[in-house]
Figure 1 (cartoon, rainbow, N blue to C red):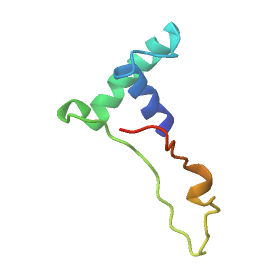
Figure 2 (figure 1 turned 45 degrees about the horizontal axis):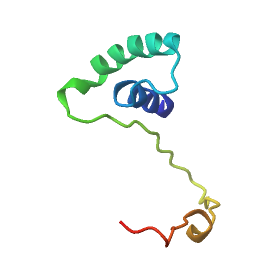
Figure 3 (figure 1 turned 45 degrees about the vertical axis):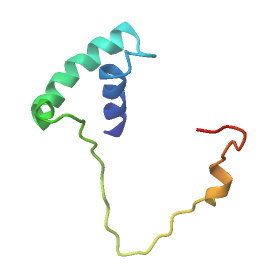
Length: 78
């Protein structure tokens, strides 16, 4: 479901970047239904849908240390 949300964002706010004419047509049709079901036109933003899962077992996510995935360019300033 989240893939559709990201594609809708590209359709609505991303100037259809990277989408074919056929994909734009299909997404536009699906978007109308999505707006009706979730009442999106009533709000200024989008709705992000996700799933939560509860489990009896305690499972730890394998993650890399933040230093391995986040890099700052110290030569640039804001």
